[in-house]
Image (tube, rainbow, N blue to C red; front, side):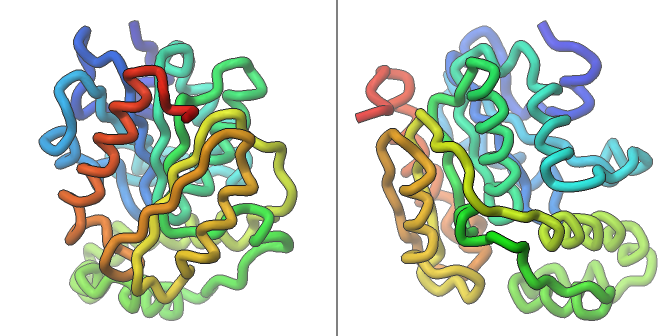
Length: 255
């Protein structure tokens, strides 16, 4: 049974009575829940696939932006509600990984830790102490986005599209820059980490620092590609996630 708050925050791509495990995905900065719309095709039918809807985009275009990344995590943890009491795996890329981790900490505090946290393309919070230096002007933000993903360039070259997408991108960068990072309590669930071999933003070795964020098992998988390896390597990533989800379903995810 869902509620209106959960529906506002969570977009369901597949979720029915056969979905024993729920995979909840967190988009990267400036992106949308629809980023994960193709994932059900690459995952078993007993896996529910859904993504978080951040404010200020898609169906929530008129909703106010959060005051900070921690406040965003508070709202998402609250919105997950009954979903958090089911067997759930969190996956986030870059900014989304940081948000997913903060949500996992809140769910753990409430007695409902996720079965597994999957993080991709970002440093752990203790490596972000003091915040990150991020672009602040519109032109610098656009240049940074395009340097990581050239396919985003047309959206910023078209004045109408630029006006539509830039506010969310700008605000996500504000949240990234304002995030204090630093020490966090360890999770009890395993962490599976993913890295692009040629990522110019973060190295696989830096991502390996996520091992310090859990009392459970840790594993790092490095895939070909840069910061946004997810799309060209989607088949390989989902094949690996199938193994993770199999462990969750068999009750051996902590091994």
